[in-house]
Length: 491
Image (cartoon, rainbow, N blue to C red):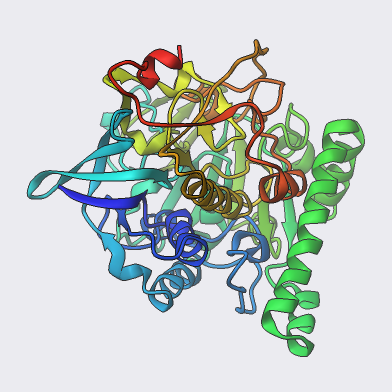
């Protein structure tokens, strides 16, 4: 069994960032990255559907230590994948990755202060040991997307698949396509395939709030032309963070006003009849994640007649396409299910502490980065209302602070212990993929530190500056025969 100071699970955007922070702030610590797939990049290597791109600007989706220097602020998937790979290669992180290692279980022993990690590989199970476990495996299942089965689906004679598993050699030229869904994936796919298909229809059960934004940030590119890359990057990054934060808080405090403003913007893109029929959601802006439309490409495809939007429900499939509950039908050669993700916690791995199962759903989050009663484990879970990496960078900085503090105190165990009663609070978003996973997600309260604030500016200050002695995070020695094990002490 190989032993390390730290094990990182996942070699995507978060995992590579975690390794960079660890090398920078915890020099000399041994580590390895266990990656289930055979490539770096996570989401940006997995998703290969047409037009795959960021749904946030790269000045906030990029790392806080490495500037984004491409001209496009809304980047294509291959450019993001290259950015992550270059980060790993330049820092030597790529040499620390064990590909084809799917972590299935993690077990903590309070007598040794160590995790034993079980990973499935092509050659069978392998085990590893570490003092700190840093979970950076993303937030959804790569193998098992949300893929509802529709009545009569098996009778369809055309091609049907989930967007998460887009066939590499698919030829859709001159074909009729229906994309089921109205989230970021569907809105990305439609304008790209519309250039080659005979026609493409986005079939939605209900509208989604969408907003257009230039793919190229002219102000950012100007600053980059007159300032060093990192200076320009940080300046635009801060501007974008402040703007995002302002819009989100306005949406929470004055939703009617923000809804009206979003509608005004939509009316500049499309006819009122289209907006009223298909782009007026029943929820407030930022009750679900905003859908970004770079350079109005989706709206342009609809206006040009190359694509259309149908708001209806599937009744059943037949040989030729989809029969709708309204009585109408959509004939198709290709049907794409852009029906969403399936959330999972800790990369789908099970966890136990001193032999007792530690189920995330039975525990409260500690500052959105640890789980009550589970020691020496930090997990990366990005923001819903802003770019994922903003939170990922802060979480990795916190993990490094924690490791260094444990070394300073010479204490092998750090564990969040809840010693107050708290009230459960609903998660920020009511998106379908969140609601479907409520019985697996960790619990959140309305009381600090047992919640995820979803506030980057506040988190940045507290995570970097607040004392780790907060009365909740406890530093402990190893358990002995006469002292309770952690599983007992955490009850």
